[in-house]
Length: 64
Image 1: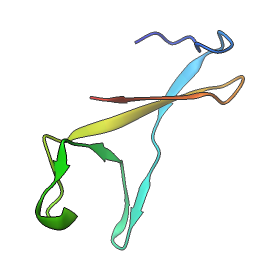
Image 2: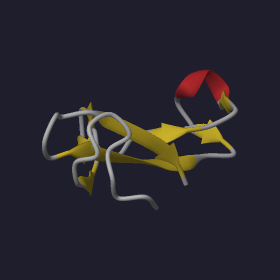
Image 3: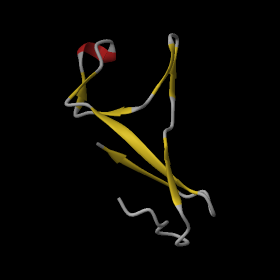
């Protein structure tokens, strides 16, 4: 993972954008489609990792 910001060349730090649900917060997921109306989650899911530039605030996300 390149730790330099593509916008300003600043340092990137790993974090997450939390998805808030009634039971609390969970990391967002990427998938190919929702299962059974979304109640059962997503198919082929991958957790989304997000990086934020400490200098300019630019966000870049990856599905891992």
